[in-house]
Amino acid sequence: MFKNHEVTLRAIAKDLKKVESQALVIGVGQGTDGPVLLDNPLPVKAANALAASLQVLGITGAADEVRRLPGVPEVGAQVLVLTGVGRLTGNQTSEEALRRAAGSAVRQLAGVESVAVALPTTTVGQAAAVAEGAALGAYTYSGLRTAEAAVKAKVGSVTIFTPAADDPALAPALKRAAIVAKAVNATRSLVNEPPSHLYPETFAEAAKDLAKGLPVKVTVLDEKRLERDGYGGILGVGQGSSRPPRMVKVEYAPTRAKVKLALVGKGITFDSGGISLKPAGSMMTMKCDMAGAAAVLNALLAVAELGLPVRLTAWLCLAENMPSATATRPSDVLTMFGGKTVEVLNTDAEGRLVMADGLAAASAELPDAILDVATLTGAQMVALGKRVSAVMGDDGVSAAVKAAADRAGELFWPMPLPEELRPTLDSPVADLANIGEKMGGMMTAAVFLNEFVGENKDGSKIPWAHLDIAGPAFNEGSAFGYTPKQATGVAVRTLVSYVEDVLVRTA
Image (cartoon, rainbow, N blue to C red; front, side, top):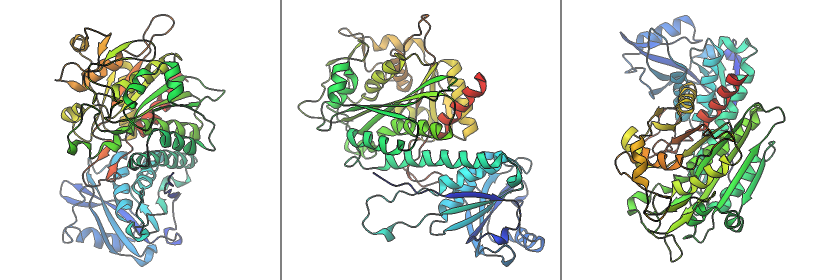
């Protein structure tokens, strides 16, 4: 369906001049007394002259500040690029600041084929962060333009100049950075696809294409199979569209698996609101309403490519929510997978209906934990804005997701599940309604999903967390750091880090 741009990553510890690169990127930080030129391979005389000129040149070291200067012959680059890392703490910078600085520089160097990055990286973790940021910054979506010249060629190769290049742990760290970045960028491309091209059937085909060559099994449940097996939520949401819904089950089951996890993703390929029609302006970005499904798919594929010893299953709940004579009406009652009934009071609260089917199906296989990811509520943006995602659910799982997000460099914040919200979902004609208390709507939606998380054989609830990425999944503003306009690929890095952390805890 689409071809993702991939960047070649490598590292060296010396002889930078021998590396063919059109641009050399070095860092500038915001110190207490002004801009600070960070550690770099420039000759001492050139470095001192540049450091003394920063303020005269108007360079501050602020995040996303990228300036081009003439190259220095001694390092063999045609262009010298200064990238801001933001405020320094004790003249130190975090891995995420390095990741963003590298990503911002590479993103803004579109049209340059080869780049060397010489940010301060004394550890393997810092070097890997720079590599990941660069690979994320090199993302491009060519779209459906007929003129190739309309899209600048992205950076093709990145060489990281770091003392850690001789550390044997760096090679696998660079491999991980490349795999994770590829998964994020594949997620971005899926989300960026127009709904005319990406709908449940073609999304399922894209999942098969992306999984080729990896040790995973992809099973597609079409509308007949969904009806036979009782997936009333997905069928109810999708019945107003001429494009039938799909449930895609992706399984990675290595023989040495130590733990069994499940991921569930919301995959509404376009959300008109259904009969409860959205205002026209609110539909403009609704091709992104399948970002959760794209994230869980590509996170699983990254885990498989990394060869992690975990049994992981992703459930992609795919439907198009459209108004028509066959669409679900407000007050209709749907029977979900597993038998629970739901009164649909608002057809624009459709994501929780398809996710309910996915959560119930995932629970039936008794995983050790379930994570679900969805662009679920506008209330998420009211509570946390457009760059911070929410995590809700069982305390232990939510805390683990937050820790994984912090390590990955993604912004998540834990929110509660107030028990007084559950009675607001009561229905006089069904087991529950699909909407409840308006205030705190993000949490009400999570309380609804909680009703479909199953139990273990001993009667205990399966550990679960819900990730609401409604705002952060799609960047309607300007690009920043390694984040482009439109699809961001949020949650992929957090999910991969979460799986890695679970394996560490269970080792």
